[in-house]
Image 1 (cartoon, protein in one colour):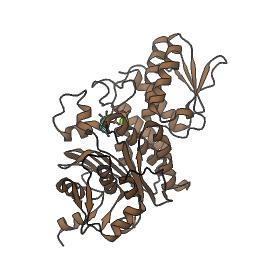
Image 2 (image 1 turned 135 degrees about the vertical axis):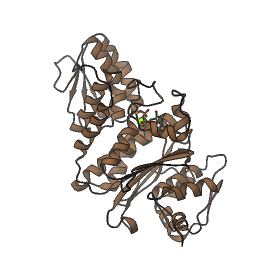
Image 3 (image 1 turned 45 degrees about the vertical axis):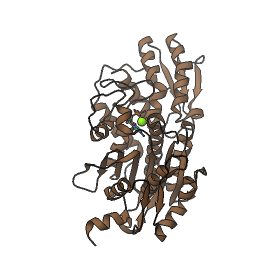
Image 4 (image 1 turned 60 degrees about the vertical axis):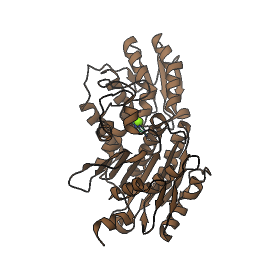
Length: 405
Ligand SMILES: Nc1ncnc2c1ncn2[C@@H]1O[C@H](COP(=O)(O)OP(=O)(O)OP(=O)(O)O)[C@@H](O)[C@H]1O
Ligand SMILES: [Mg+2]
C-alpha cells in the first residue's frame, strides 16, 4: 500500500488532509469503503453535514464493520436522524455526538464532556479543565458567528489504541455548517483575501468580527477565544485542526514545523482539539502564561485597579455569577441592565463567583469589559468575591486590556 492510500484509509488527526479531501470530493455522498479507522472529529464533521433538516442531506455508504461499531457507539445515527440526545457516553472513553442549540447549553455540555472523559482523577485535572474551556469557547463561537440554524455538533473521545498507545490523548470536536470564518470576519475586516488569511488572523489576540482592528474588544467579544485555544494546544503539546471554507490551519506539536496550512477545508467550520491525557502542567499556571502572552501583544496604558478582590462595604449590590455562567448573552444583559447603570451613578457593585471553578476569557469579557471601562471613567470599584485563581486571572486580564483600547 502506498502512503497516499494509507492516509485515506484511516481518518486521523495526525493526517487530517486525507479525510478533508475525501469529504470535498464526495459531493452529496460519502463512500467509506476501505476506511478502517475514524476518529470522533471526522464523524462529527460527517454528522454535521448529514443532519436531516438539511435540504440536501449527505448520504454515507460503504461503512466497514469497525467504523460502523464506533459510529453506533457515539450515537451517529440518532444525531443524523435528528433524535436529539442529551450528553452521554461511555465514561472515560467517548462522549456521544451531541447537537447543541443555544448558549444556555454551553456550560452544561462543556463541563459534562470534560467530566465524562477525564473524570475526577487529579492526574488529569489539567487536561479536564482544558477540555472544558475549549469546548465552551468553540460551542459559543458556533452560536455567535456561524449563523448555522442547526446549531453545532460536538463529540469527544479518548484515544489509547494503535498510534496512541504510547501516549493516550483526549480529542474533542465541534462542527457547524454555517458561513465559515472568512465570511464572518469580513463583516469587519474587508481586506481578508483568502480563507487561509482568515484562519491565520482568527488566531491573533483581539481580532474578531465584533470590532475593528486595533481595539481590544466589543461589548460581547474580546477576539481571544481561538488565541487561547491555539496557545493551550501548543503548551500541552497537542494538535489542533481549524478547517473552514477552502482552507485549514493545523497545529501539530509533534512535527518540526508546528503550524501549517492545507488547501482543503470544510463547508462550515470544523475544529478538532487533541491533548495528552496526562500532563505535568498545572492549568492555573498554563492559563496565566497564555494571558501573559496575550498581554505582551497588547498595547498598555497605565492601569488603574478598579477590580477589588475583597469583600465589598455593606450597601453594595451583589450578583451571583454561577446562575448564568458561560451564558455570554445573559452576562451582557446583566452588565447592561444592572452593572453599567450603577457604575455610571458611581455606585459600586459586587460579583460573587461562589461555585465557579473555571470561567472562559470570553465569558469574563462579556460580563466585565464595558463595566470596567465605565468603572474606570467614574473611578468606581467593582468588588469580586470567591474567585478561584483561573477566574481571577481571567478577570484581571480583562481589566488590563479594557483600559488599553
Ligand atoms: N464557528 C465559526 N463560524 C464562523 N466564524 C467563526 C467561527 N468561530 C470563529 N469565527 C470567527 O473567528 C473570529 C475569532 O474567534 P475568537 O473565538 O478568537 O474571538 P471572538 O469569538 O470574536 O471573541 P471571544 O472568543 O473572545 O468572545 C470570530 O470573531 C469570528 O469572526
Ligand atoms: Mg470566540
